[in-house]
Image (cartoon, rainbow, N blue to C red; front, top):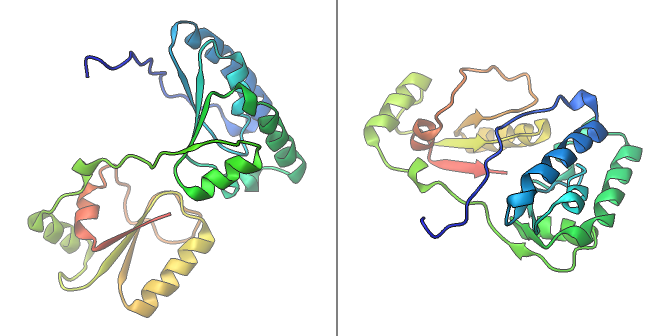
Length: 212
């Protein structure tokens, strides 16, 4: 919209995890200082086990911490307990530099409280409605490609899926006698049928989508 504030989009980049959290933080500190000099607001994607909040200290404008993925399980396997505790402590000390905290659900709001955040707003993840539509022709085509009869039920799970959750889903779907379609990054020995970029046809072929 014409009345919307200007947005600076930073090109997507990735620093190899093996270089360490400290190196990543030092790099991002310089990026934040440079980009926020002419910005109205800085939005940080917050995670309890990444040194995100200290970046707010170096921002030249108000900061919003968008708590989108605050689950410790998302990266705890890569960190020792000592490092985990240090990062959590570091984030807790820098809560005061953040102007506003948001969380996608009550569970992540509870995590923010554990960091000493007294006030936060629930801001659910936006849903791209154009990805969900009904097309009997596409539903039939995808099911034929996957070898699934039209009259059978298909559950679809999307996203980063821990191995234990996959095993649980498999047991449930086996008991219910339904098909399970896994789409995303997951740690399992399951056979990868294909690599896909467009999920819309698979949403269409499914009867129920499971979101973590």
